[in-house]
Image: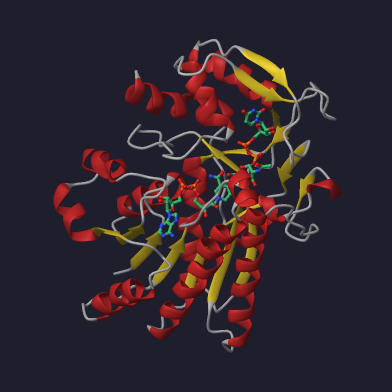
Length: 346
Ligand code: NAD
Ligand code: UD1
C-alpha cells in the first residue's frame, strides 16, 4: 500500500490534500511544526473517515523540516515496517510575501534549506517521488495576463525567489540522478474556499493577508470593512483580476499528480494549477454576497506594493498531462468557504 509523507499537512492546502488522500484509503504521515496551523484541524476527520481506518492509516508528527535527524528517524522507522514512505507531497513552508521582504533569511532557511534536507533524506531511503507546492508568484506577470509554464520567470520578492530556486533544485536533482527522480512542481494560482463537507477550511494562525479569509472576517463582522487594493487597474471594473480555484480541485490535482508519478517513467515537470478563468476583486465580493446573502462593506484603498493587475493560469498542460479538470465554480468556492467558516465562528 502507498504511504505518503505530507509536510505542512496541517496547513490550509496540506490538510485538504491529507483528507482527500485518506478518503481514498491510502496511508498518510503528516509532518508539521504547527507554526501556522493547529492539531485541531484533524478533529473532524473522524466524521467522514472510519476511526479504525484513521488509526491504521494516519499519523501526525510534530516537527520541523529543518531537523534532519527527525526526518531521518521518520524515514528509518517506516523503512522498518512493511510499508515504507513511497512519495512526499511537500507543502511545508512560509508564505507571506510581506514577511519574506522583512525577514528573507527565515524564508530561505525554511523554504530552501528545509527542502534540501528533505530531498537529501528522501534520497538516502530511495524515496524519489516528490510533488512540491510552488506558486504563480514565480512568474513575471508583466509579460501578459495569461501565464503558461513557459512564461517568463522572474520572482519579485524573497518568497517568490525561494519557490523558484526550489523548483530549479528539484530539476537539477532529477537531471543528476540519471533521471531516477520523479518531480512535479505544482504552481498554485489562488486557492480559496473549503472542503465541501465543511470538515476543514482555512484558519491561519499568523496574520491574514489573503483576500478570502479577510472577506469572511468582514462577513462575520470581525472586520468592519474590506479594503480593495486599487480601482485603477487595467480591468473591466478597475480592480485586480486573479484565477481563484476551489481548494478541493487544488487538492485533487495532487492526487492526479501522484497517480501520474506512479504510472510513468522519471519526470520533471512544472504545472499550473488554476481554472483559467479571471475574476476581479469586485466580482468575487459580489459573488460572495449573492451566494451567501451577506453584505460585504468595502472601501477602495491604495494599490498594494508588488501587486499585478491580472494573473490568470493557462491550465491546459495540467489538464492534458494529468487528466485533471477543475470542477467547481466561484459560487461553490464562496458557498463552501462560508459554510465552513460560519459554522466554526458564529
Ligand atoms: P499554510 O501556512 O496554511 O501551511 C503551511 C504549513 O507548513 C503550516 O501548517 C505550517 O505550520 C507548516 N510549516 C511551516 N514551516 C514549517 C517547518 N519549518 N517545518 C514543518 N512545517 C512547517 O499555507 P498553505 O496555504 O497551506 O500553503 C502550503 C504551501 O503552498 C506553501 O508552501 C505555500 O507557499 C504554497 N502556496 C500556497 C498558496 C496559497 O494561496 N495558499 C499559493 C501558492 C503556493
Ligand atoms: C499573494 C501573493 C503571492 C502568494 C499568494 C498566496 C502578493 C503580491 N502575492 O497572491 O505571492 O503566492 O498570495 O499566499 O502578496 N486584495 C485586496 N484587499 C485585501 C487583500 C487582497 O484587494 O485586503 C486583492 C489583491 O490586490 C489581489 C487579490 O485580492 O488582487 C488577491 O490577493 P491575495 O489573496 O493576497 O493573493 P495574491 O496577491 O494573488
